[in-house]
Image 1: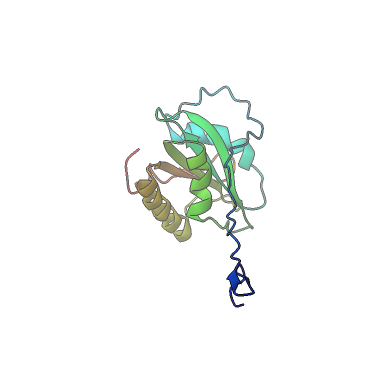
Image 2 (image 1 turned 90 degrees about the horizontal axis):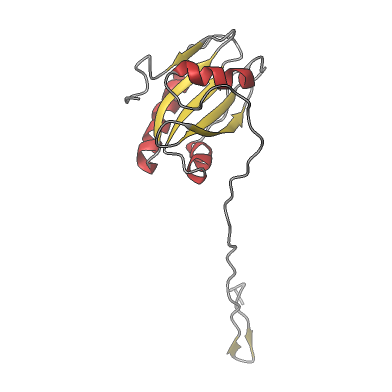
Length: 167
Protein backbone atom coordinates (compact mmCIF):
# COMPACT_ATOMS: atom_id res chain seq x y z
CA UNK A 1 0.00 0.00 0.00
CA UNK A 2 3.07 2.27 -0.39
CA UNK A 3 2.06 3.25 -3.93
CA UNK A 4 -0.32 6.25 -3.63
CA UNK A 5 -1.91 5.59 -7.02
CA UNK A 6 -2.10 1.80 -6.75
CA UNK A 7 -4.62 -0.10 -4.70
CA UNK A 8 -4.78 -3.83 -4.14
CA UNK A 9 -8.19 -5.28 -3.32
CA UNK A 10 -8.64 -9.03 -2.97
CA UNK A 11 -5.34 -9.71 -4.74
CA UNK A 12 -6.34 -7.58 -7.74
CA UNK A 13 -4.17 -4.53 -8.60
CA UNK A 14 -6.36 -1.51 -9.31
CA UNK A 15 -3.76 1.02 -10.45
CA UNK A 16 -5.08 4.50 -11.03
CA UNK A 17 -3.76 6.37 -14.08
CA UNK A 18 -1.53 9.37 -13.50
CA UNK A 19 -2.88 12.75 -14.51
CA UNK A 20 -0.58 15.35 -15.99
CA UNK A 21 -1.87 18.88 -16.36
CA UNK A 22 -1.88 20.26 -19.89
CA UNK A 23 -1.04 23.94 -20.35
CA UNK A 24 -1.56 26.43 -23.12
CA UNK A 25 0.68 29.51 -23.24
CA UNK A 26 -0.76 32.83 -24.28
CA UNK A 27 0.71 36.26 -24.68
CA UNK A 28 -1.86 38.77 -23.48
CA UNK A 29 -1.85 42.31 -24.87
CA UNK A 30 -1.87 44.67 -21.92
CA UNK A 31 -2.41 48.04 -23.56
CA UNK A 32 0.00 50.03 -25.72
CA UNK A 33 2.25 53.07 -25.67
CA UNK A 34 1.57 56.07 -27.86
CA UNK A 35 4.70 57.15 -29.68
CA UNK A 36 5.71 59.02 -32.81
CA UNK A 37 8.60 56.61 -33.21
CA UNK A 38 8.28 54.18 -36.15
CA UNK A 39 9.40 51.24 -33.95
CA UNK A 40 12.60 50.58 -35.90
CA UNK A 41 15.59 50.51 -33.55
CA UNK A 42 18.43 52.41 -35.18
CA UNK A 43 20.28 53.70 -32.13
CA UNK A 44 20.08 53.59 -28.31
CA UNK A 45 18.37 56.99 -28.20
CA UNK A 46 15.33 55.44 -29.95
CA UNK A 47 14.96 53.05 -27.03
CA UNK A 48 15.53 55.79 -24.45
CA UNK A 49 12.81 57.91 -26.07
CA UNK A 50 10.37 54.99 -25.89
CA UNK A 51 11.22 53.67 -22.43
CA UNK A 52 12.27 56.86 -20.62
CA UNK A 53 8.72 57.95 -19.71
CA UNK A 54 7.96 54.50 -18.24
CA UNK A 55 11.04 54.56 -16.03
CA UNK A 56 11.21 58.24 -15.13
CA UNK A 57 10.98 59.08 -11.45
CA UNK A 58 10.63 55.49 -10.26
CA UNK A 59 11.84 54.95 -6.70
CA UNK A 60 12.98 51.38 -7.44
CA UNK A 61 14.68 49.48 -10.22
CA UNK A 62 12.55 48.14 -13.05
CA UNK A 63 13.89 45.70 -15.65
CA UNK A 64 12.19 45.55 -19.07
CA UNK A 65 12.72 43.67 -22.31
CA UNK A 66 11.87 45.02 -25.74
CA UNK A 67 10.81 42.35 -28.22
CA UNK A 68 12.19 42.87 -31.71
CA UNK A 69 11.35 41.18 -34.99
CA UNK A 70 13.91 40.14 -37.61
CA UNK A 71 14.15 43.72 -38.92
CA UNK A 72 14.77 45.23 -35.45
CA UNK A 73 11.25 46.64 -35.17
CA UNK A 74 9.81 46.73 -31.66
CA UNK A 75 6.85 44.39 -31.45
CA UNK A 76 6.28 44.62 -27.71
CA UNK A 77 7.68 45.33 -24.26
CA UNK A 78 7.50 43.34 -21.04
CA UNK A 79 8.24 44.22 -17.42
CA UNK A 80 10.43 41.39 -16.15
CA UNK A 81 11.10 42.61 -12.62
CA UNK A 82 10.24 45.47 -10.30
CA UNK A 83 12.85 45.53 -7.58
CA UNK A 84 14.05 47.69 -4.72
CA UNK A 85 15.99 50.94 -4.49
CA UNK A 86 19.27 49.33 -5.53
CA UNK A 87 18.45 46.03 -7.23
CA UNK A 88 15.94 44.06 -9.26
CA UNK A 89 15.91 40.26 -9.17
CA UNK A 90 16.35 39.13 -12.77
CA UNK A 91 16.62 35.52 -13.88
CA UNK A 92 17.14 34.38 -17.49
CA UNK A 93 13.99 32.25 -17.30
CA UNK A 94 11.80 35.31 -16.72
CA UNK A 95 13.69 37.39 -19.28
CA UNK A 96 13.33 34.90 -22.12
CA UNK A 97 9.83 33.56 -21.40
CA UNK A 98 8.00 36.57 -22.95
CA UNK A 99 10.57 36.77 -25.75
CA UNK A 100 10.01 33.15 -26.74
CA UNK A 101 6.23 33.33 -26.46
CA UNK A 102 6.27 36.65 -28.35
CA UNK A 103 8.32 35.16 -31.21
CA UNK A 104 11.10 37.73 -30.78
CA UNK A 105 14.14 37.44 -33.03
CA UNK A 106 16.14 39.79 -30.82
CA UNK A 107 15.82 41.88 -27.69
CA UNK A 108 17.07 45.00 -26.00
CA UNK A 109 17.31 44.96 -22.22
CA UNK A 110 16.46 48.14 -20.34
CA UNK A 111 16.55 49.04 -16.67
CA UNK A 112 16.82 52.17 -14.58
CA UNK A 113 19.01 53.29 -11.71
CA UNK A 114 16.90 55.30 -9.24
CA UNK A 115 20.11 56.96 -8.01
CA UNK A 116 20.17 58.80 -11.33
CA UNK A 117 23.65 57.51 -12.22
CA UNK A 118 23.42 55.33 -15.36
CA UNK A 119 26.86 53.75 -14.86
CA UNK A 120 26.43 49.96 -15.00
CA UNK A 121 27.26 48.06 -11.82
CA UNK A 122 29.38 44.92 -11.69
CA UNK A 123 26.12 42.98 -11.24
CA UNK A 124 24.68 44.64 -14.36
CA UNK A 125 27.69 43.50 -16.38
CA UNK A 126 27.58 39.94 -15.03
CA UNK A 127 23.85 39.67 -15.72
CA UNK A 128 24.27 41.04 -19.23
CA UNK A 129 26.96 38.47 -20.08
CA UNK A 130 24.76 35.69 -18.75
CA UNK A 131 21.72 36.87 -20.71
CA UNK A 132 23.81 37.15 -23.90
CA UNK A 133 24.91 33.53 -23.42
CA UNK A 134 21.34 32.36 -22.92
CA UNK A 135 20.22 34.39 -25.93
CA UNK A 136 22.84 32.64 -28.07
CA UNK A 137 21.59 29.29 -26.80
CA UNK A 138 17.90 29.93 -27.56
CA UNK A 139 18.46 31.92 -30.76
CA UNK A 140 17.33 35.35 -29.53
CA UNK A 141 20.07 37.96 -29.95
CA UNK A 142 20.64 40.47 -27.16
CA UNK A 143 21.42 43.63 -29.12
CA UNK A 144 21.95 46.01 -26.20
CA UNK A 145 21.42 46.63 -22.52
CA UNK A 146 20.57 50.20 -21.64
CA UNK A 147 20.82 51.62 -18.15
CA UNK A 148 18.72 54.77 -17.73
CA UNK A 149 19.56 57.51 -15.26
CA UNK A 150 18.01 60.87 -14.52
CA UNK A 151 17.08 63.61 -17.00
CA UNK A 152 17.50 61.43 -20.08
CA UNK A 153 20.99 60.19 -19.21
CA UNK A 154 21.77 56.62 -20.19
CA UNK A 155 24.53 54.13 -20.90
CA UNK A 156 24.48 51.64 -23.75
CA UNK A 157 26.53 48.56 -22.91
CA UNK A 158 26.80 47.83 -26.63
CA UNK A 159 28.17 51.31 -27.42
CA UNK A 160 30.55 50.99 -24.47
CA UNK A 161 31.86 47.70 -25.87
CA UNK A 162 30.62 45.77 -22.83
CA UNK A 163 28.03 43.57 -24.52
CA UNK A 164 30.40 40.99 -25.92
CA UNK A 165 28.93 41.05 -29.42
CA UNK A 166 27.94 43.32 -32.23
CA UNK A 167 24.65 45.03 -32.85
